[in-house]
Length: 117
Image 1 (tube, helix red, strand yellow):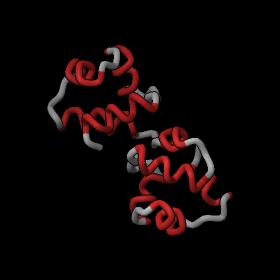
Image 2 (cartoon, helix red, strand yellow):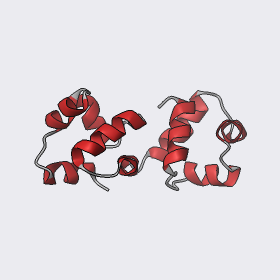
Image 3 (cartoon, one colour):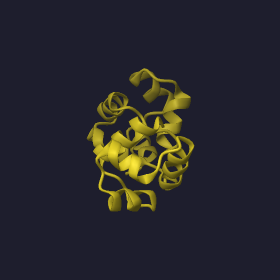
Image 4 (tube, helix red, strand yellow):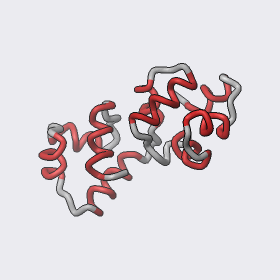
């Protein structure tokens, strides 16, 4: 799912979406390009404006997510086992996510919350 294509097809600008959602246009731009992951609340607002399922917002994650995930875990000085304990994500699955497997929406929310990104 590509938020840029969906937004353009809907004839909205980034500024339009940001105003309707109540966030800055810079923050919306980062969401759209996958540089930031929105909260569920913001994702639902964006989805409402674009008339798409809110879970689809999380499918816009950039391809560097696994790299960011590993760096953030290391910055927090957490081991893979620590993350698995905190999130209840199976160790093999977490390692796969860190190596490029796309996380489920629930996993994404957990990881975002625990690692603060």
